Image (cartoon, rainbow, N blue to C red; front, side, top):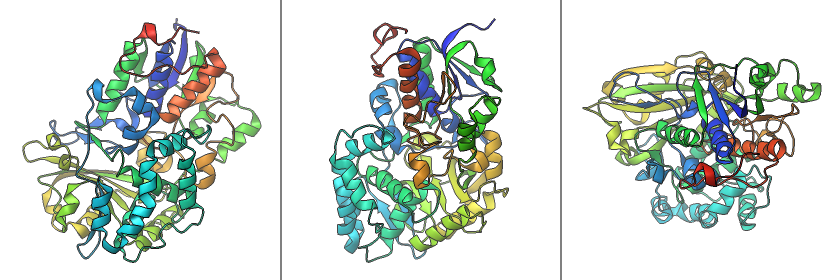
Length: 492
């Protein structure tokens, strides 16, 4: 007979883990169910070609893990996770050998951009000065009053005129900024993409775009350790097909998309809510290529090799065109590509002349193409001879990414299109979007505010909603490493 628990969580991506941490810290009995054989979702790591070389399966660089309110309090450092700052946060090479470089220091970045440095400073410096307030406001899903009222006003002043690229005279700075905007994986230009550019762009000069030493799986591991330390249990290879299987739990939190919620609910959702979930839109797909290489990427511009993240897409107009085509479902041979050479920041990721290279291409949702040749061609445009360094490679199409993780519908790694509407009303327009109409059932995935990224806030906010509405607990538990089960709150 299944033992009664306070909360059952389906899915162990960063948001499922964050929800479990929060609930377990509140003194609740928590269990997690993971259909796969390993936890972590987008934080997983695999040794595809060499037992000594770890590849990040989905996420490799984590600006939000360094900045989000959840991880600031959870505090990865004393738990043994070291977030390594690359010498250059992100880089954007152009065809003629020039490159835009986002240095950790705003002064160095502005100096490298020459005549466009003043405009870059005008955009970024006020956000850097109000970074914590801006991050907290955005990460709340815009459902709480800002602790720093100036921060959202600064963001609005940059977005509402829809002139983010105005004032630049050259072509390097606009390409550098558009590469960041493309992290929205959607139409360019757009208000939602501009917001992403301002959020992630300024973080390169604030808390940074770090990589966890030893790989992303380290983050998942310490979150799981904290859950177990507070009495929680984690079950891998445990696929849940219906909410009826979790009837022993007082609350159920789903780290799933709306499509999976519809399936799990077995027709029990109210008709209007179910219709709203069916209207939820998914964005373009990501096609992933992993390479095992013999040496660092041979960039034409050596400075690009110092970057933690590299954006490959050419000019800002070329990137915008490619992203619009992906939204329209039109496949091309020149997609926007994001690349990470982890050993450039974390030398321990290289072993005996072998090192991983991680790369995504933005493609139409459900695109069936193997991305290896496509991505390799894009890299070689800016790093001639890259193909000669490749020892082994594997690709996962956008279509197949959904098989790996059902949350990635058609390869949409953001679990829902980041349009302006869906940025604010995901998955449906509700004051408490994490709470479903089914008693005790909550959605805690990136399909809820504040959306995609390894920040844990979707899970944390869903857990706080569950504590309020299901257990009558209104005080958020401490997430600090020093807190023990006895000090973290009584079970409701």
